Image 1 (cartoon, rainbow, N blue to C red):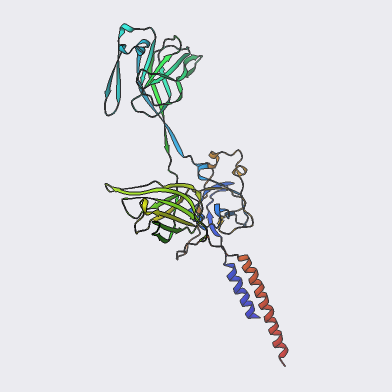
Image 2 (image 1 turned 45 degrees about the vertical axis):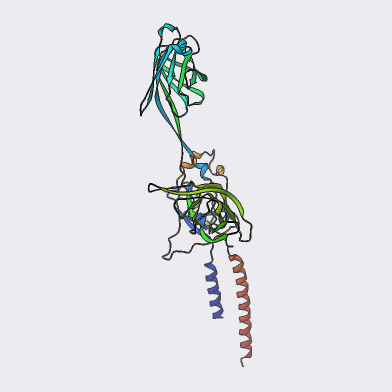
Length: 451
């Protein structure tokens, strides 16, 4: 009987070590009810489900706590806008001079830094009405907002029209506005800007009163919106090269790769092995070796070396794709590929998990084993009157793996079916029960045969 107890204890110990879920630490430093955590590449690599549907967050008691997953672009803008203000050259001219080319002499002065225009007006064509000619520059970003300084006319609404032209002959209206400066009992009102109907890149602007009010502009400033793309914090994973197939009949070289993890790729990077390569490739994917290949896209690839600098094609943008097998197909008639194989990288933008720190710390994030339920909710259920700014204000709980062993673990292939440990334990328990009954029967037989 002692031997059977040893067998049972050994089996139980073995089954207790069969845990497929990967566990990650969450660093909470206070007793806040909500935290935000940026998912790491290791979390994606450990998941056995598309869209990391096997992710859970548990407290010290082993209870699941609710969480919401937010995509990168839900939290981070794609562009940044800054406003640059620049004074423009202003020239008071008489209205008739703009209608009579002989009355207006234009002199351009070009330099490396700027381009200036000088105007000479024939006084013989003098007219009582004065308008203002604004030189915005030969080349400038689109402008839509003008601000003004003017003399006099305090307490008077000045209604203005703004026209645009590239040659001082053909004018088109681009906007209207009202200027006002007034004071009363120590309070002041200043309306000194006009927003045009649409952005314009015209060289010249004409500012003119729509009525007969006297206008003495002393300064005009342009506000340029500078919009620049923000470089996102991309995650990249190199996928494993599997094989090379040469189809000499059709002149096609197929290079196959395998992703060990379920990476939600939205960008593809092809590292060509040789400089001065110009070619194109088609990208295909599939999840099973016997399944047909699915076409993703065809793209141009290049890697040039000039003046000790390497120039490569931009990262390839694709629809978010989670796939195990990837293929690069090179047509030898369209550039082809040499004897060396390129490197394939998959890129994606990490998601942020917003979670409720209910219960006692420490909290852990687990992924890799499909639980009976996953406590996911809408972010609006966690944050009343949800706004993006409220997420940015949440404390950050960093995700870290447990202390690693001295031996580096081999990368796991999360596409292979995860073992059903519960079934194993059930069948193992039944087998141990049968063995135990058999042992008891043998023991009874031996005791009966004793004199």
